[in-house]
Length: 195
Image (cartoon, rainbow, N blue to C red; front, side, top):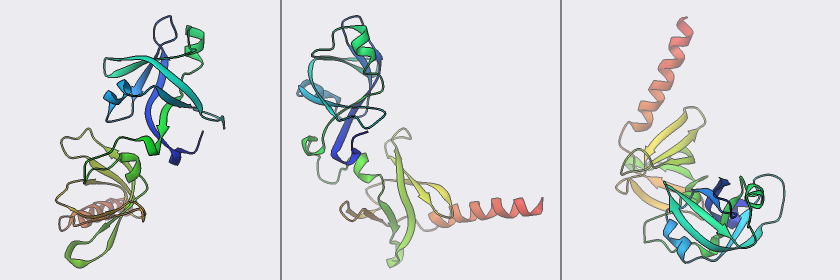
């Protein structure tokens, strides 16, 4: 697939929709309304090293939490079927401008989270995903070398510094949050030894 760092993903094509070449796609952007402003998009192949393909968006509409897209030159079910699994993207430089103190999830993935509680600098882990389904505050899904997966609320009150260039996020986490995960991990290990 094309270098992910160069692209902002908007949607993933799931299947043909209709008989005239339309495709049904899962929405991967927080700004689906921007499809109305975009005519020039790119398709990234799901497999292989195919070059990104420029496409023109002719028409789109929202459908049951997904988006239906119709591209110029894609005029049949067969044409649409060939696009299954492709990612609809734009160059990262063309992304929507965000409000201050808001971040793209893709920019957070791979950042190290450091707990600076009480002036320290304790590694909490590396962000591997962001769970937005838990409620009003997203959860950072971290991978920690010893603890495995950790969930940390991405609450503004915890944030102290976000340095996307250095791939580092400093947070003042509640006292004992990491230790709670450590003791839970250690407790599981001691139970295994008793068997």
